[in-house]
Length: 371
Image (cartoon, rainbow, N blue to C red; front, side, top):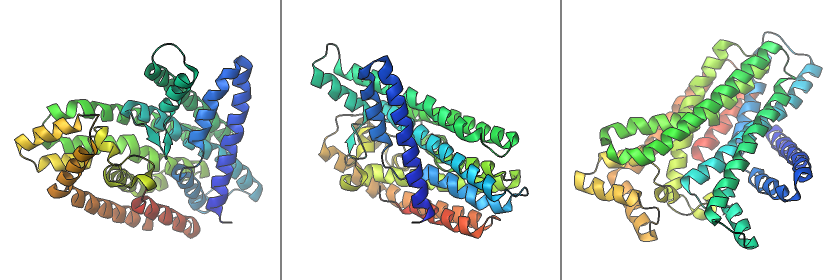
């Protein structure tokens, strides 16, 4: 069994144990709260664990270059603590998905109903009074909030076992910065979906780039790398070098996600075809498409993008418009260029060769994934 598989299993086990303990705690308040944990645990099960893996292999890569070498016993304790940190990153990611699906009105996640839809189903199955959709919204907001709090709890459990207080504070600073940047990016995403059609198409690309930088790129790749490296006691120079590797990779990650959100196969992505179009996401690919259209065509394009009840035929029309504009080809080229930029930055880093090779493998998976 390779180390990546072992880490994923350890993180999965830690999340399961954590949820089981919190379930018992909540059941003491009221047995009906157990359903909330069940929905959370369903979402936490599976996933690619990219954030956990980037944090882990960053830690492995930086350990041998740390000026203060840890003893074998200290490394074992740090590895155990790192599992909590990785579990915290995955808990935070899942919380962000809960809120993101609600704001995007996305019905599915990983081939199953999204959390707000599960709360709606619970309401319907029991024939409760009031609005089904409002109950779904309220339940998912509260579930996401619980998970945000629990991610901090898991993170603190890990960093309090850091090799030094200085390392612990550096990790906490990175985690705090990550949370702020994600929320900022999420708001900018919502803002763009609503304000984008009223603004100049010439500004759309810059705004879309800013959204994907803060909503996804930094927290999906940069923050896990920074936290893992910081936990090893890596120098400020190494952390800067890891950012140079992380940012273009994170942008490529989001661009690939944008392509899959429009053209991905539902059987592989677990989401309906063209789901991002139905949600009106103003991505880089959409910005590039709008730049190539005439004013009358832009108006029609924007009207379709604003339609949350888009038919399959309308989705296909938008897909063909995006392809015909050359936007899809441009995004694929951007993904390739950003991926190459990221790998070049990684090559220049002075890291442990074993860990570095795993970071390269992860980077390639991020760029070339199909779901």
